[in-house]
Image (cartoon, rainbow, N blue to C red; front, side, top):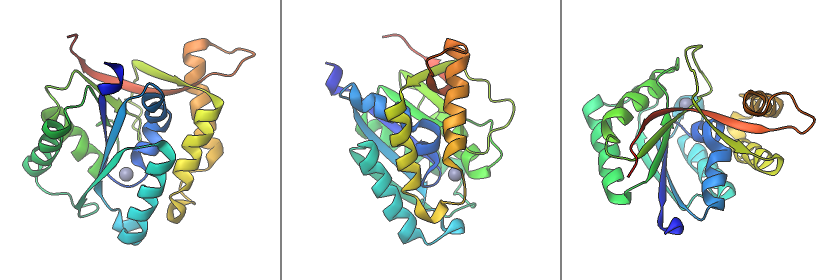
Length: 208
Ligand SMILES: [Zn+2]
């Protein structure tokens, strides 16, 4: 049944998956799917961890995320790879996702890269793993899957990113809008009707 499906979303820090996959999370919720998210670190190198956790909870409410798990890794100094793999694997076997959205390793932040690498091992058995474009992408990030959104979803995504008030200087909302319009134009061309999209790299796709 469509509404029995669970999606797992992973971010290294509070606000990562909102930036990379906010519209796609809303789209999964619209389909009636359950969304569970994991925030690996509370982001203490860019603010108080308590504040940042509260902001993540607020953003999760805006996106309709059903459950939010904090792993409380030390920001910018993540544990050994084997530990991250183990933690993600344990969560995955508990929630049994049909889809995981996580970091791509085409990224310049070491925590994002660590999550991307651990995800490859931890989510091997998940039918589809989509790697989102982080806020520090490398030019090698070449998407092959686009999730289309609409204007309402885009503004809700911006609202979720803005819920991270302590990070308000990080990304201008117009940058989020421009990026969504740019990726939308890759699919629909330049058109009188604006399209919005989020780009992903599909890591593997097992058809059941
Ligand atoms: Zn991050």
